Image (cartoon, rainbow, N blue to C red):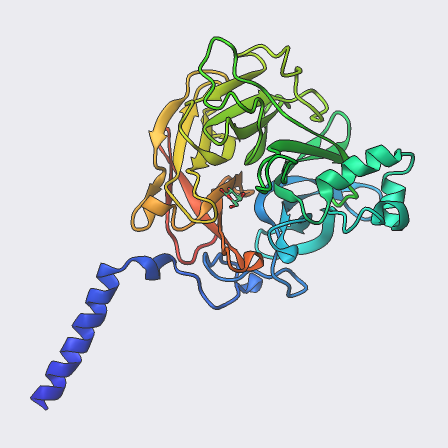
Length: 395
Ligand code: GAL
Protein backbone atom coordinates (compact mmCIF):
# COMPACT_ATOMS: atom_id res chain seq x y z
CA UNK A 1 0.00 0.00 0.00
CA UNK A 2 2.78 2.39 1.03
CA UNK A 3 4.46 1.59 -2.30
CA UNK A 4 1.28 2.52 -4.16
CA UNK A 5 0.92 5.84 -2.32
CA UNK A 6 4.60 6.55 -3.01
CA UNK A 7 4.11 5.77 -6.71
CA UNK A 8 1.00 7.95 -6.93
CA UNK A 9 2.89 10.81 -5.27
CA UNK A 10 5.70 10.40 -7.80
CA UNK A 11 3.25 10.52 -10.71
CA UNK A 12 1.58 13.62 -9.24
CA UNK A 13 4.89 15.38 -8.65
CA UNK A 14 6.13 14.45 -12.11
CA UNK A 15 3.04 15.86 -13.75
CA UNK A 16 3.26 19.05 -11.67
CA UNK A 17 6.95 19.35 -12.56
CA UNK A 18 6.06 18.81 -16.23
CA UNK A 19 3.56 21.62 -16.04
CA UNK A 20 5.85 24.08 -14.36
CA UNK A 21 8.91 23.33 -16.48
CA UNK A 22 7.06 23.56 -19.79
CA UNK A 23 4.78 26.48 -20.47
CA UNK A 24 3.74 25.36 -23.94
CA UNK A 25 0.59 23.63 -22.63
CA UNK A 26 -0.70 27.09 -21.83
CA UNK A 27 -0.91 28.27 -25.38
CA UNK A 28 -0.64 25.07 -27.45
CA UNK A 29 -3.05 24.39 -30.32
CA UNK A 30 -6.18 22.46 -29.38
CA UNK A 31 -7.88 19.76 -31.44
CA UNK A 32 -11.30 21.24 -30.87
CA UNK A 33 -13.43 23.82 -32.60
CA UNK A 34 -14.69 26.84 -30.77
CA UNK A 35 -18.48 26.57 -30.37
CA UNK A 36 -19.81 30.03 -31.23
CA UNK A 37 -22.90 29.43 -29.07
CA UNK A 38 -20.67 29.21 -25.98
CA UNK A 39 -19.86 32.90 -26.34
CA UNK A 40 -16.20 32.41 -25.53
CA UNK A 41 -12.93 32.72 -27.40
CA UNK A 42 -10.70 29.63 -27.21
CA UNK A 43 -7.26 30.75 -28.41
CA UNK A 44 -5.53 27.82 -30.14
CA UNK A 45 -8.75 26.01 -31.11
CA UNK A 46 -10.06 25.80 -34.66
CA UNK A 47 -12.62 28.41 -35.62
CA UNK A 48 -15.38 27.57 -38.10
CA UNK A 49 -17.88 29.81 -39.86
CA UNK A 50 -21.65 29.28 -39.73
CA UNK A 51 -21.36 26.76 -42.61
CA UNK A 52 -18.96 24.67 -40.53
CA UNK A 53 -15.91 25.56 -42.66
CA UNK A 54 -12.59 26.72 -41.19
CA UNK A 55 -12.56 30.50 -41.28
CA UNK A 56 -10.22 31.65 -44.04
CA UNK A 57 -9.17 35.18 -43.14
CA UNK A 58 -5.49 34.92 -42.25
CA UNK A 59 -3.18 37.90 -41.91
CA UNK A 60 -6.47 39.72 -41.53
CA UNK A 61 -8.27 42.58 -39.87
CA UNK A 62 -11.46 42.94 -37.82
CA UNK A 63 -13.42 46.17 -37.51
CA UNK A 64 -16.96 47.52 -37.33
CA UNK A 65 -18.24 49.07 -40.53
CA UNK A 66 -21.45 49.48 -42.54
CA UNK A 67 -22.40 46.50 -44.69
CA UNK A 68 -25.41 45.95 -47.02
CA UNK A 69 -28.53 44.99 -45.06
CA UNK A 70 -30.04 43.08 -48.00
CA UNK A 71 -32.80 45.62 -48.68
CA UNK A 72 -30.90 48.54 -50.15
CA UNK A 73 -29.64 50.06 -46.90
CA UNK A 74 -26.70 49.37 -44.63
CA UNK A 75 -26.24 48.02 -41.12
CA UNK A 76 -23.19 48.05 -38.83
CA UNK A 77 -21.44 44.73 -38.41
CA UNK A 78 -18.08 43.37 -37.40
CA UNK A 79 -16.24 42.64 -40.63
CA UNK A 80 -13.30 40.21 -40.78
CA UNK A 81 -11.18 40.22 -43.95
CA UNK A 82 -8.05 38.17 -44.62
CA UNK A 83 -6.17 35.67 -46.78
CA UNK A 84 -8.23 32.70 -47.97
CA UNK A 85 -5.50 30.08 -47.69
CA UNK A 86 -7.44 27.17 -49.19
CA UNK A 87 -5.09 27.65 -52.16
CA UNK A 88 -2.05 27.38 -49.87
CA UNK A 89 0.76 29.92 -49.93
CA UNK A 90 -0.06 31.55 -53.28
CA UNK A 91 -3.04 32.99 -55.14
CA UNK A 92 -5.03 33.78 -51.99
CA UNK A 93 -8.37 35.49 -52.52
CA UNK A 94 -9.53 37.91 -49.83
CA UNK A 95 -12.18 36.24 -47.67
CA UNK A 96 -14.85 38.42 -46.04
CA UNK A 97 -16.95 37.46 -42.99
CA UNK A 98 -19.47 39.34 -40.87
CA UNK A 99 -20.63 38.89 -37.30
CA UNK A 100 -22.94 40.50 -34.78
CA UNK A 101 -21.15 39.20 -31.68
CA UNK A 102 -17.55 38.33 -32.73
CA UNK A 103 -18.21 34.59 -32.14
CA UNK A 104 -20.55 33.61 -35.01
CA UNK A 105 -19.17 34.45 -38.46
CA UNK A 106 -21.00 34.35 -41.81
CA UNK A 107 -18.85 33.90 -44.94
CA UNK A 108 -19.57 36.20 -47.89
CA UNK A 109 -17.07 34.64 -50.30
CA UNK A 110 -13.80 36.00 -51.60
CA UNK A 111 -14.46 39.68 -52.17
CA UNK A 112 -11.21 40.11 -54.10
CA UNK A 113 -10.65 36.97 -56.14
CA UNK A 114 -7.37 35.66 -57.40
CA UNK A 115 -7.42 34.87 -61.14
CA UNK A 116 -7.02 31.15 -61.96
CA UNK A 117 -5.62 31.67 -65.50
CA UNK A 118 -5.06 34.47 -68.05
CA UNK A 119 -7.92 32.98 -70.14
CA UNK A 120 -10.33 33.44 -67.23
CA UNK A 121 -10.01 37.22 -67.68
CA UNK A 122 -11.38 36.83 -71.25
CA UNK A 123 -13.90 34.05 -70.63
CA UNK A 124 -15.20 33.92 -67.05
CA UNK A 125 -18.25 36.22 -66.76
CA UNK A 126 -17.24 37.25 -63.21
CA UNK A 127 -13.99 38.74 -64.55
CA UNK A 128 -15.24 39.95 -67.95
CA UNK A 129 -17.92 42.05 -66.19
CA UNK A 130 -15.44 43.35 -63.59
CA UNK A 131 -12.78 44.32 -66.12
CA UNK A 132 -15.04 45.31 -69.05
CA UNK A 133 -13.26 47.77 -71.35
CA UNK A 134 -9.75 46.78 -70.22
CA UNK A 135 -7.17 46.42 -73.00
CA UNK A 136 -5.34 43.07 -73.32
CA UNK A 137 -2.24 44.75 -71.83
CA UNK A 138 -4.24 45.96 -68.83
CA UNK A 139 -5.64 42.46 -68.37
CA UNK A 140 -2.08 41.10 -68.51
CA UNK A 141 -1.23 43.42 -65.64
CA UNK A 142 -4.28 42.27 -63.61
CA UNK A 143 -3.13 38.69 -64.12
CA UNK A 144 0.43 39.60 -63.16
CA UNK A 145 -0.88 40.84 -59.81
CA UNK A 146 -3.77 38.48 -59.02
CA UNK A 147 -2.69 35.28 -60.80
CA UNK A 148 -2.94 31.98 -58.95
CA UNK A 149 0.85 31.80 -58.53
CA UNK A 150 1.21 35.26 -56.97
CA UNK A 151 1.55 36.44 -53.37
CA UNK A 152 -1.57 38.23 -52.11
CA UNK A 153 -1.01 38.78 -48.39
CA UNK A 154 -2.16 40.81 -45.39
CA UNK A 155 -5.22 42.36 -47.09
CA UNK A 156 -6.92 45.17 -45.16
CA UNK A 157 -10.07 47.14 -45.93
CA UNK A 158 -11.27 50.68 -45.26
CA UNK A 159 -14.70 52.18 -45.82
CA UNK A 160 -14.57 55.70 -47.23
CA UNK A 161 -17.69 57.52 -46.00
CA UNK A 162 -17.10 60.44 -48.41
CA UNK A 163 -17.04 58.28 -51.57
CA UNK A 164 -19.19 55.41 -50.28
CA UNK A 165 -16.51 52.99 -51.56
CA UNK A 166 -14.69 50.14 -49.88
CA UNK A 167 -10.96 49.97 -50.55
CA UNK A 168 -8.64 46.99 -50.04
CA UNK A 169 -4.85 47.28 -49.89
CA UNK A 170 -2.63 44.21 -49.81
CA UNK A 171 0.96 43.05 -50.06
CA UNK A 172 1.46 42.14 -53.71
CA UNK A 173 4.47 40.03 -54.54
CA UNK A 174 6.04 37.40 -56.74
CA UNK A 175 9.25 36.59 -58.59
CA UNK A 176 10.88 38.96 -61.07
CA UNK A 177 12.85 38.26 -64.24
CA UNK A 178 16.01 38.65 -62.13
CA UNK A 179 15.03 36.55 -59.14
CA UNK A 180 12.74 33.54 -58.67
CA UNK A 181 12.27 34.37 -54.97
CA UNK A 182 8.53 34.80 -54.28
CA UNK A 183 8.99 38.13 -52.54
CA UNK A 184 11.08 40.00 -55.10
CA UNK A 185 8.43 42.48 -56.31
CA UNK A 186 7.65 44.09 -52.92
CA UNK A 187 4.65 46.27 -53.82
CA UNK A 188 1.29 47.34 -52.40
CA UNK A 189 -1.85 46.47 -54.39
CA UNK A 190 -5.10 48.43 -54.22
CA UNK A 191 -8.64 47.37 -55.20
CA UNK A 192 -12.05 49.04 -54.91
CA UNK A 193 -15.72 48.07 -54.66
CA UNK A 194 -19.16 49.47 -53.86
CA UNK A 195 -19.67 46.67 -51.34
CA UNK A 196 -17.47 45.07 -48.68
CA UNK A 197 -18.56 41.74 -50.18
CA UNK A 198 -17.08 42.70 -53.59
CA UNK A 199 -16.46 42.20 -56.37
CA UNK A 200 -13.28 44.22 -55.84
CA UNK A 201 -11.66 45.59 -58.95
CA UNK A 202 -7.88 45.92 -58.98
CA UNK A 203 -6.78 49.55 -59.40
CA UNK A 204 -3.06 48.84 -59.55
CA UNK A 205 0.00 48.11 -57.50
CA UNK A 206 2.66 50.55 -56.43
CA UNK A 207 6.01 51.15 -54.86
CA UNK A 208 5.47 53.58 -51.98
CA UNK A 209 7.39 56.30 -50.11
CA UNK A 210 11.17 56.50 -50.33
CA UNK A 211 13.93 57.26 -47.88
CA UNK A 212 14.72 61.01 -48.08
CA UNK A 213 18.16 61.85 -49.43
CA UNK A 214 19.38 63.30 -46.13
CA UNK A 215 18.65 60.02 -44.24
CA UNK A 216 20.42 56.67 -44.38
CA UNK A 217 18.52 54.23 -46.59
CA UNK A 218 18.93 50.68 -45.20
CA UNK A 219 18.38 49.18 -48.67
CA UNK A 220 19.11 51.74 -51.39
CA UNK A 221 19.12 49.02 -54.09
CA UNK A 222 15.31 48.85 -54.09
CA UNK A 223 13.45 52.10 -53.43
CA UNK A 224 9.91 52.32 -52.10
CA UNK A 225 9.38 48.64 -51.28
CA UNK A 226 6.14 47.69 -49.49
CA UNK A 227 5.73 44.26 -47.89
CA UNK A 228 3.76 43.33 -44.72
CA UNK A 229 1.24 46.11 -44.33
CA UNK A 230 -1.82 47.43 -42.58
CA UNK A 231 -4.29 50.30 -42.86
CA UNK A 232 -5.37 52.84 -40.27
CA UNK A 233 -8.25 55.33 -40.34
CA UNK A 234 -7.84 58.24 -37.95
CA UNK A 235 -10.77 59.89 -36.17
CA UNK A 236 -10.73 62.77 -38.72
CA UNK A 237 -11.14 60.24 -41.56
CA UNK A 238 -7.55 60.47 -42.80
CA UNK A 239 -6.30 57.09 -44.02
CA UNK A 240 -2.77 55.75 -43.59
CA UNK A 241 -0.88 52.75 -44.87
CA UNK A 242 1.78 51.33 -42.56
CA UNK A 243 4.26 48.88 -44.08
CA UNK A 244 7.69 47.39 -43.93
CA UNK A 245 10.16 48.66 -46.52
CA UNK A 246 13.90 48.75 -47.24
CA UNK A 247 14.04 44.93 -47.44
CA UNK A 248 12.03 44.58 -44.18
CA UNK A 249 14.46 46.81 -42.30
CA UNK A 250 12.37 49.93 -41.77
CA UNK A 251 8.68 50.57 -41.11
CA UNK A 252 7.01 53.47 -42.88
CA UNK A 253 3.69 55.24 -42.30
CA UNK A 254 2.35 57.02 -45.40
CA UNK A 255 -0.77 59.15 -45.66
CA UNK A 256 -3.38 58.09 -48.23
CA UNK A 257 -5.28 60.44 -50.52
CA UNK A 258 -8.84 61.41 -49.56
CA UNK A 259 -10.25 58.47 -51.57
CA UNK A 260 -7.79 55.98 -50.00
CA UNK A 261 -6.84 54.83 -53.49
CA UNK A 262 -3.23 56.06 -53.56
CA UNK A 263 -0.72 57.97 -51.45
CA UNK A 264 -1.38 61.61 -50.51
CA UNK A 265 1.63 62.50 -52.70
CA UNK A 266 3.75 60.74 -55.31
CA UNK A 267 6.88 59.26 -53.72
CA UNK A 268 9.04 61.73 -55.71
CA UNK A 269 7.11 64.73 -54.36
CA UNK A 270 6.13 63.55 -50.90
CA UNK A 271 7.25 65.72 -48.00
CA UNK A 272 8.90 63.88 -45.12
CA UNK A 273 6.96 64.44 -41.87
CA UNK A 274 3.83 65.59 -43.73
CA UNK A 275 3.13 62.75 -46.13
CA UNK A 276 5.15 59.99 -44.50
CA UNK A 277 7.73 59.01 -41.92
CA UNK A 278 10.15 56.16 -41.30
CA UNK A 279 10.23 54.55 -37.85
CA UNK A 280 13.36 53.14 -36.20
CA UNK A 281 15.37 52.55 -39.42
CA UNK A 282 17.12 49.19 -39.44
CA UNK A 283 14.96 47.70 -36.64
CA UNK A 284 13.82 44.82 -38.93
CA UNK A 285 10.13 44.78 -38.07
CA UNK A 286 7.08 43.57 -39.99
CA UNK A 287 3.41 42.59 -39.45
CA UNK A 288 2.58 46.18 -38.40
CA UNK A 289 -0.70 47.19 -36.73
CA UNK A 290 -1.52 50.83 -36.03
CA UNK A 291 -4.31 52.05 -33.75
CA UNK A 292 -5.32 55.10 -31.78
CA UNK A 293 -6.03 54.22 -28.16
CA UNK A 294 -8.92 55.69 -26.16
CA UNK A 295 -6.36 58.04 -24.58
CA UNK A 296 -5.67 59.54 -28.02
CA UNK A 297 -2.19 58.03 -28.19
CA UNK A 298 -1.08 56.10 -31.28
CA UNK A 299 0.23 52.56 -30.87
CA UNK A 300 2.19 50.64 -33.47
CA UNK A 301 2.68 46.93 -32.83
CA UNK A 302 4.93 44.73 -34.98
CA UNK A 303 6.82 41.45 -35.09
CA UNK A 304 10.38 40.60 -35.98
CA UNK A 305 11.06 38.95 -39.36
CA UNK A 306 11.20 35.15 -39.03
CA UNK A 307 8.76 33.98 -41.74
CA UNK A 308 6.01 31.70 -40.42
CA UNK A 309 7.81 31.24 -37.08
CA UNK A 310 6.77 33.40 -34.14
CA UNK A 311 9.06 35.88 -32.42
CA UNK A 312 8.93 38.76 -29.97
CA UNK A 313 6.46 41.59 -30.50
CA UNK A 314 7.23 45.24 -29.93
CA UNK A 315 5.09 48.34 -29.51
CA UNK A 316 6.02 51.92 -30.22
CA UNK A 317 3.70 54.74 -29.20
CA UNK A 318 3.42 58.43 -30.02
CA UNK A 319 1.26 61.48 -29.31
CA UNK A 320 0.95 62.32 -32.98
CA UNK A 321 1.16 60.06 -35.94
CA UNK A 322 4.13 61.81 -37.55
CA UNK A 323 5.62 62.71 -34.18
CA UNK A 324 8.27 61.13 -31.99
CA UNK A 325 7.69 57.40 -31.49
CA UNK A 326 8.68 55.91 -28.15
CA UNK A 327 9.90 52.31 -27.94
CA UNK A 328 7.55 50.65 -25.40
CA UNK A 329 9.18 47.22 -25.78
CA UNK A 330 7.37 43.89 -25.64
CA UNK A 331 3.63 44.32 -24.92
CA UNK A 332 3.20 40.65 -23.95
CA UNK A 333 3.38 39.64 -20.29
CA UNK A 334 3.81 36.18 -18.74
CA UNK A 335 4.68 32.72 -20.06
CA UNK A 336 5.03 32.77 -23.84
CA UNK A 337 5.63 36.53 -23.96
CA UNK A 338 8.97 36.13 -25.75
CA UNK A 339 7.22 34.61 -28.79
CA UNK A 340 3.97 36.64 -28.62
CA UNK A 341 2.26 33.45 -27.35
CA UNK A 342 3.32 31.83 -30.64
CA UNK A 343 1.56 34.37 -32.85
CA UNK A 344 2.33 37.20 -35.25
CA UNK A 345 0.42 40.48 -35.05
CA UNK A 346 -2.19 41.36 -37.65
CA UNK A 347 -5.01 43.36 -36.03
CA UNK A 348 -6.03 45.27 -32.91
CA UNK A 349 -9.68 46.24 -32.68
CA UNK A 350 -12.43 47.20 -30.28
CA UNK A 351 -15.55 45.28 -29.34
CA UNK A 352 -18.76 47.26 -28.90
CA UNK A 353 -18.22 47.53 -25.14
CA UNK A 354 -14.84 49.19 -25.72
CA UNK A 355 -12.73 46.08 -24.98
CA UNK A 356 -9.58 46.13 -27.13
CA UNK A 357 -8.70 42.77 -28.68
CA UNK A 358 -5.39 41.53 -30.05
CA UNK A 359 -5.66 39.22 -33.07
CA UNK A 360 -2.48 37.36 -34.08
CA UNK A 361 -1.90 34.57 -36.57
CA UNK A 362 -0.41 31.30 -35.38
CA UNK A 363 0.91 30.19 -38.76
CA UNK A 364 1.05 26.51 -39.66
CA UNK A 365 3.63 26.50 -42.45
CA UNK A 366 2.84 22.80 -43.19
CA UNK A 367 -0.86 23.46 -43.72
CA UNK A 368 -1.44 27.19 -43.98
CA UNK A 369 -5.23 26.95 -44.14
CA UNK A 370 -5.23 25.45 -40.63
CA UNK A 371 -3.23 28.34 -39.18
CA UNK A 372 -5.01 29.41 -35.99
CA UNK A 373 -6.40 32.77 -34.95
CA UNK A 374 -5.38 33.83 -31.47
CA UNK A 375 -7.52 36.57 -29.94
CA UNK A 376 -6.53 37.95 -26.55
CA UNK A 377 -7.73 40.84 -24.41
CA UNK A 378 -5.64 44.02 -24.45
CA UNK A 379 -5.23 46.21 -21.39
CA UNK A 380 -3.91 49.73 -21.25
CA UNK A 381 -1.84 50.05 -18.10
CA UNK A 382 -1.00 53.72 -17.75
CA UNK A 383 -0.21 54.52 -21.36
CA UNK A 384 1.28 51.07 -22.07
CA UNK A 385 -0.49 48.50 -24.22
CA UNK A 386 -0.25 45.04 -22.63
CA UNK A 387 -1.39 41.56 -23.67
CA UNK A 388 -1.73 38.52 -21.39
CA UNK A 389 -2.60 34.94 -22.27
CA UNK A 390 -6.15 33.73 -21.61
CA UNK A 391 -7.15 30.13 -22.47
CA UNK A 392 -10.85 30.96 -22.46
CA UNK A 393 -12.45 34.36 -22.28
CA UNK A 394 -15.32 36.58 -23.45
CA UNK A 395 -15.46 40.26 -24.26
C1 GAL B 1 6.11 36.51 -42.73
C2 GAL B 1 5.05 37.51 -43.12
C3 GAL B 1 3.87 36.72 -43.65
C4 GAL B 1 4.35 35.88 -44.82
C5 GAL B 1 5.47 34.96 -44.36
C6 GAL B 1 6.02 34.12 -45.49
O1 GAL B 1 7.27 37.14 -42.30
O2 GAL B 1 4.67 38.27 -42.01
O3 GAL B 1 2.85 37.62 -44.04
O4 GAL B 1 4.82 36.70 -45.83
O5 GAL B 1 6.51 35.74 -43.82
O6 GAL B 1 7.15 33.40 -45.05
